[in-house]
Length: 216
Image (tube, rainbow, N blue to C red; front, side):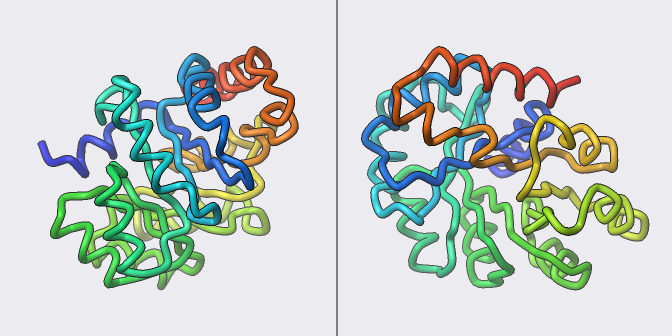
């Protein structure tokens, strides 16, 4: 089994990627551990924080659970081939882009590195998939809704879609029922206020609510 397939299998099992887009990553280890305790094994640290690379590198070395079978760490907001290479070198097990980037997809295919490529229109979705994306992140999904996922999959049923943006406990199941293999959730799951207050038990509880709902 390829590494990319292993990550895809994990996505289809857990059905949820936590998007960690924070201004301060000093508590990243406590946060990551709390998410793991709550059943959130797929964690994406975004390059909107320059410390994301060293954070993922540290977590890969210090947390045994991130073996690509039980859990996996990714780097998101990848916008260039140079960023993709840096993320790979720091130990990211999958990459996530906000838009279609053919060079990044091809690099990931060559390196057997899972790539969740962002796309919006059906043409972008198909371009990303045909280029070799492991899965396609429909972004931003907020204005599109679950029916958009269903409509895209009608003529393109083989594509693995992961809608991201505006998803929470109230609508997550609707996206999964529409055919998404998983969803990406940021602030509704990774609450900055809870992290600022170091309320790790509450972080675990919220994560547990989301992880259980995703697997229903």
